[in-house]
Length: 282
Image (cartoon, rainbow, N blue to C red; front, side):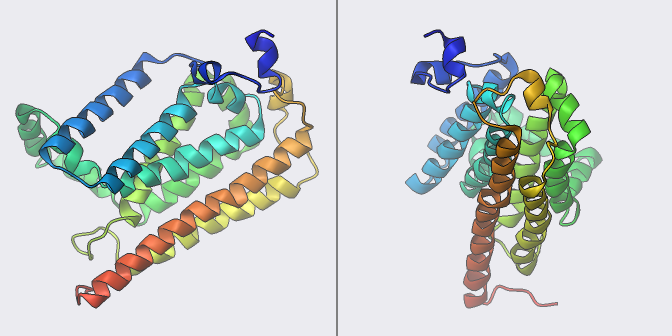
């Protein structure tokens, strides 16, 4: 059976699954550079096995979601597309940021680049970027917005047909995921953390609700919202409404479970800081 025939049943070998659907040199460079910084940085700043496992688990999930034949099925099956985005937007960024890789990767930079980075951080541009990338209102809004906007049927139609829009869609949810979990998983009191500990507990609830509601709507609507998948040729033998129903449930349930984990981490941070008397009450 040829690989084209196997795609129709998802009956691919491991080697075929790992083969990139659309090879991206830029993506390869980003992954290799990130891996190099983390490996080299962990030699200078040794970390525990748990943080290594968290980082590499998230790293592998991102790669498999973006640069293998998973991407082929995500372009042709709605529920696979939603599974892909659960990993890209929720689980993989959460795992990577739970490893707290920032200082480790910074230690992996050559000394000259670290000095240049330190100087850049003192510029107004860097301070503006930091302000917006850690803003306690803007980042949660962006986190939800970039899930929902790509699900608008017209937006979804063009983003799945245009390779540049498609890549923008995937990378935008990844980056917003990193930004969001960077806020929620911060283990420090505020300040210096950008968001208060109580805010970190409440925020996942607020961001979860609109995603659940949209997921329920997609799962239960009697109309085919995304005819694009039939137009491109649905890669598995499933009806449009069944595909759409599964996609809505995936957005509704697994994504909510991942965000619930963020709530638990924030609660643990609250109890730890409270026990140590480090919570700052205004």
